[in-house]
Image (tube, rainbow, N blue to C red; front, side, top):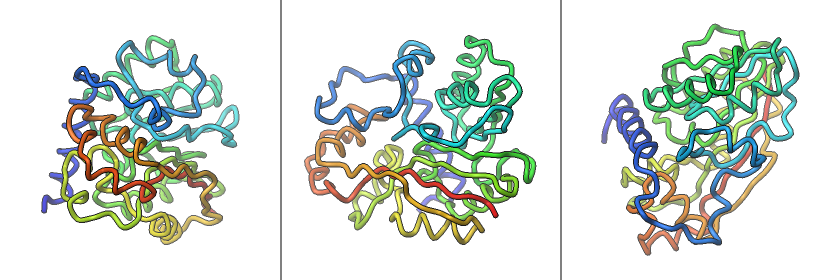
Length: 264
């Protein structure tokens, strides 16, 4: 099994490639499009450069308590969609920080931020297991379908608790899974597609609580049917694993969840 460093390198290469290659001619099943970016306004999605997408599984800022003047940290900020949405919420007196480990994503996010003319958004290179962010310095931590990709999730949860100010809050959209077969866990493409590294919802909640967060709960769930699982498997590598007939057996075992909680 690859160590954590190698796993992160694999994920970074996977998403750099996904940003470049687009759909390679494959057409997703119409019924499966609900695993594409959901909860965003059309004008939000239009802020990304042509051909870019969000590999997220929800909008962690929808119905959030983010207010003007606050500091928001986005773990795994990708091409920057949630950075742009957060910047609108915090206003010119607030601040938004994105952290990503993939250079191609960082460049895309910085370009989108510059095109939007935002002076209150910063994108930093780093890993979410060791955030380049000061302790007790942010009001909100958000993340969109990223923590499942970490090979060291407890380190991520601990870092979230470290950087939050007392009273600071989390709102995280992510993929969770139950009873995945061994072949799924061993498939590197399914790991990159946010399936192979997903953990059970109960373990996710327990990890956040072990890190010291309280009032941890799941606010929303979307359990995926067979078509949605195929779409999820093909989002980042659309001509690879989305057509595997074994994916039908994963229906109901994978879902997106929105987690919330706070630092006491």
